Length: 348
Image (cartoon, rainbow, N blue to C red; front, top):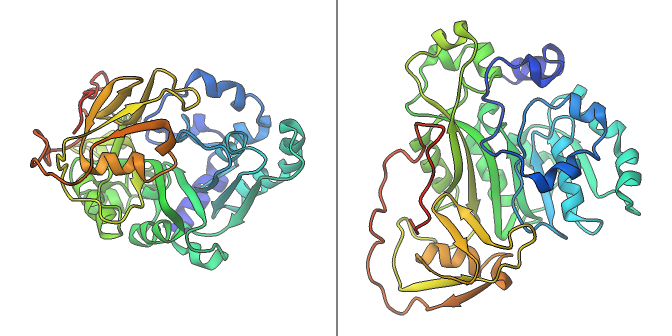
């Protein structure tokens, strides 16, 4: 499958218009404040990027990021503007043709952004074998990926390496494709469906189990949407399976609990994260309005208190008294079946 994917993205595709489903577009719609940053990226880098949207966690100034499956470097160059001259974005991709495009324009972007030094680096390699690239343990504040993990034949290795590379309190913030059931072998082994990010999609419950097995104890769904298979022939080959594009954030925090436990805690958002003055959206169920007391479970309290977000919140309570589970904390499929559905603003 590595050879199938390298051929598909290195030779067969010439632009995102050649894709035959919407699967390679992440769940996010690009916010208006990011568009000027995108406009500063070299046209060839943009034209050879096979996706849409942008996987972009907030509060990145000075951070060190790793982009898995960085392709032509579009996201790397956008994110490099957000981490600034003193941060760094490292891209990893296994497709030489894509990396050639990314590397060819490093000097162009350094001059365009006005930096005195390169704040990007690119490595040729497999995301399952990050240990072979000389990247030190606990050296990244965040790892991002835009619809690439599903293409990996060894997702266990990917999650294991991401956890190793993240600093304590860091996060894996990524978009990918998931299925509402386990994908049958006929779909999984179809080269075209695999290249279109469907054949390698995990059943959502298997993904949650995989994340927890590698130390990410409370995966948080940020947003999701159903996938449209626009090619009739491909739709027939994958008939009966519901596919969803979803963005998750996985925090590297020791001691997170398997359920949403109520300790009577709350937070108040200060409104101080850039581009998020009115509200801070941690995930699909935690849309926190500035200045308002917002009840949270113990895990959410720690995701804000023990990470780079701490100075932007006031924290109420501690872990001295336990009140049981938050009502409604369950295990049903987390994705919306309708593209128009939205998440609630309440905790858990």
